[in-house]
Length: 146
Image (cartoon, rainbow, N blue to C red; front, top):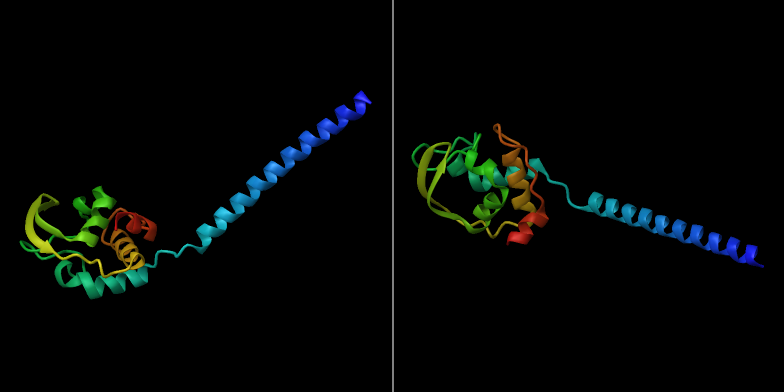
């Protein structure tokens, strides 16, 4: 009788461990599925947004306009802080900023009319272009700061 109870107890422990590991595996599969289903950053769409919204001031090459609008190409200001970059697009920028050692004092308007996905795409495009840091901006990052 004691042996039977011991064996049943061991079976229960093993089964319980199996169920827990199965649950963990299922949770991992669900998490991976959610990541796969999350919209991917679309650099092509980001380039389209950049061309339409940003290029008049920052130019198609990301070089900006000397004395007026700062460069985004190899930009120390941009590459230093992705949160600041997102906030700049969302809220605009007014006042003096120093980019690559040069001071700029102009106005960048808020782009709140862009969707979280569009902002993520355009910033991912900018970060992937012109010698920048290759950071990826996700829509959830934008949403958290909106």
